[in-house]
Image (cartoon, one colour):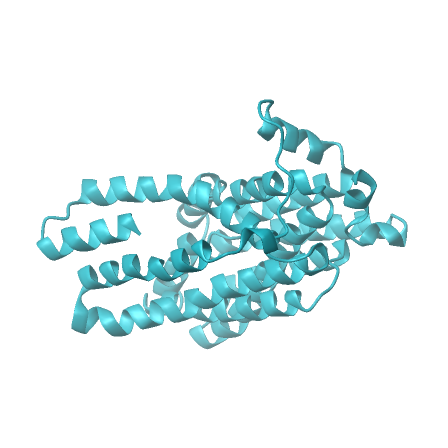
Length: 324
């Protein structure tokens, strides 16, 4: 909120500069690294364990839905109001969230037991994942796909400009992708238990949609592929987060959410430059398609791993039960 208000006021005063924008963006990244896992962890403390999958999926649906309505509203208001007032409005809008958080009744929440002070919480979380095969496989697939199959911001602008004929199509395709993401998250929210087979299948759907979108000949075809792209991506992300909660004891859940947040957000500095290099050195189509190939191979490998196990291993939650 403070960053949005600062940028908005500087813009209105006409003294905003590029270094200031860089600084505020850097600070936003730091705040996001702390806020993202904490916010996701709060969701798990608002509901009972049996409803955790639904809560995480609904949280994803709200986030992806905001990516549809937020940019559309901003595009409609930027003309009459200007960017400065939009940033100010963004900062003021955080008051609603603060009101909701401050209004929570702690005695009605399902809080996790506090971890003992000291120790090495990050290493403990990594060690926990490494010693549980299901979580390790899920985390490896999640990290690979997050790193290479979600770089839409790098690949889609080039496709929109060079293949579909207009750079404005980038925003349109991204909006349709967000619509698919909201559908995927809502479908996921209807599931009582998440299976590993579902995660693997959604990873393959994401990869196949990446390939289809990469070679879409026009923007209409791109719209058709954008829906399963968003659907598979959101379903995979929310399912992996749900599994990390179902397979872990209460005192480890927040740490595992932080790990998945690092894998998803922190992998951009790796996947982004690689995607840009592929677009410049090889082909603009492969800038999106190579991530799809990685997603399909990863999902297929996970599916083979699941099918080679006893059917009971397909259902998440047994690890957490055994640890209780």
